[in-house]
Image (cartoon, rainbow, N blue to C red; front, side, top):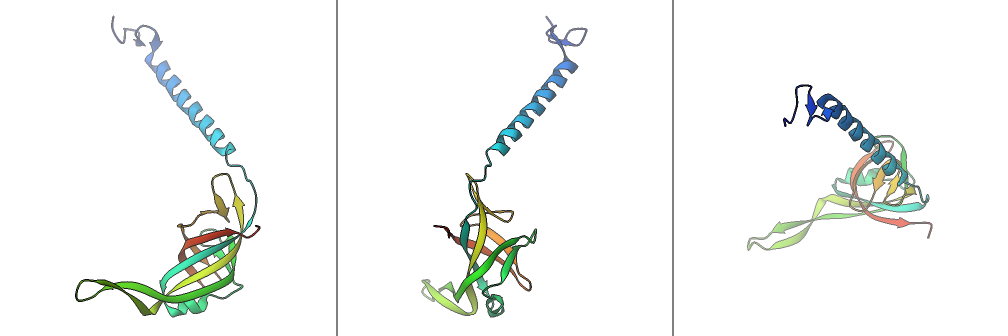
Length: 164
């Protein structure tokens, strides 16, 4: 018995073209079903106010001066409101420098600063993540935020639910 006979049927049972169409339809149906199930799991649980602490590392003093309490910061990509600055602090950036003996010591850089910006934001909390504006936000995530005259790229270092 041949694998493909004279009529183009596989094992004499089904035409190769029909089999190809059937496989493509099954793949499309599987994709549609998986997308429907994925979207149903993204339920919104609640909308808490959160305090997000944002770290800007190794910036110049001009950047420190541009941080103003009460200013609003927006997502860089969408210009949607991300949050309002409720507090900020800064300190000299610390670097590790080798000594002549090869030992690493901490040295404060007088020309560079680390800035901690606290933002009050309205979040959307889902079962698996927290989003602010259109970004999924978590400690350790880098974000780019902009103000009227500023742009900051930094790291989320703390998130606290303000509603508790």
